[in-house]
Length: 279
Ligand code: PAF
Image 1 (cartoon, protein in one colour):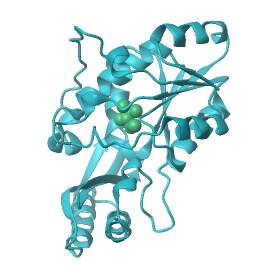
Image 2 (cartoon, helix red, strand yellow):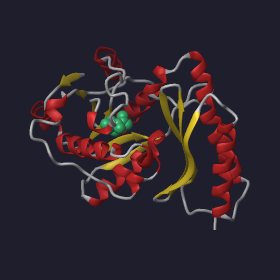
Image 3 (cartoon, rainbow, N blue to C red):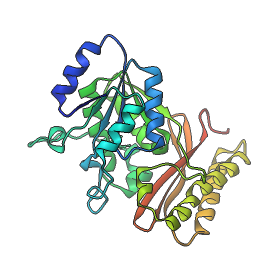
């Protein structure tokens, strides 16, 4: 696996490989099994696998964890190489946002719900860096985790609206034995906080069961799913709920939640339906 740090180096490295397909896995590092599942999916489908490793400052709000976000390039590089990544693109902030940078991508509407309502401006940073990565790497496919369902929807929207010509592949969420969705931010949790955080996965599972118990009435099923999830979360006083709501992104309906445990904010979702909603 080769590590490259500039747009010019990435393009030069990929130039002789353009005859085959290129897969991109955009990441912010601190790799866990969720990232490795993305790498493996890309490896299985693409001739060349590129991963980007960049903690993107523009998607963090003031006061969020940009400074403390876990960074360990050497450990990440080892895991990426072992998972079949061919090229690891590790740009500096100046490489991505050089002096004078003033163009941003806004996905209106979609980026203002759920996460967008709690982290105003977050998806502007995500959309901007993803478009830059797509333009730099020009992948045939890009791989994203289902855990960030709204991010997937925002990226799919921008790809369609701006005719980017990359196929977005969504890889299922990876969970630990307790049902906690894997996230780089789980590293912030103490043992007790980890136990508390498990309530989110349990709440979403209970909400999904409530959804399934009410076939034929989409509005009632959605209200019941969200209320069930909120009730499970309310029973755990050591966490704060930002939201637990049913959302529809294109043809996918999800029950999504965000909680705060101590100083850590966690998100998760379960897919309720991938086709038409109940009548
Ligand atoms: O999901 C992430 O890790 C980030 O939001 C992404 C897609 C790499 C953009 O910085």
